[in-house]
Length: 149
Image (cartoon, rainbow, N blue to C red; front, side, top):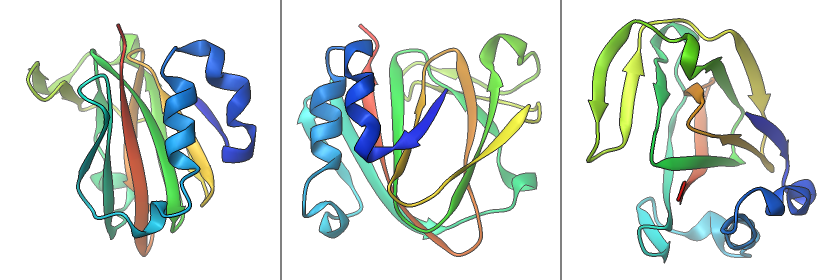
C-alpha cells in the first residue's frame, strides 16, 4: 500500500506501465465535475469509478481485496480513512472471491488505518486488503482500476 499526494505521483509511474496514464487522468481540470459512474480510459485495462456518498464508521468497513486489478483511490473532497492488512494474513472469508467483480471480503480487522485527505491517493495491490470509505460526512472520490497484467 502507498499513500501520497498527487503532486508526488510521478515517482510511482515506473511501478506499472499504465500508472502514468492513470495519474494524468487524475490531473484533469474537470475531474470534480465528472458524473458518478464508470469512465473508460483504456477499456478494461484502465478505467475508473467516481463516487460521492457518506463515509461510514470503521466498524462497518470490511476488508476487501482484488486479484486482477490494482486500485488507485484518489480523494477529490471529504476526509477518508482507509484500513489496510496484508491479504496473506486474511484467513476468514466473509464473501468468497467473485471473479466477475474481482472482489472478495474478509472478516478480519485492518492492521492499520491511514488518513487520505483531499488531493491524496492510496495504491492497493492484490497483496493489500483494504477497508475504504471510512469517514464522517460526504466523500467524493475516484477509484482507478488498473489491470495487473
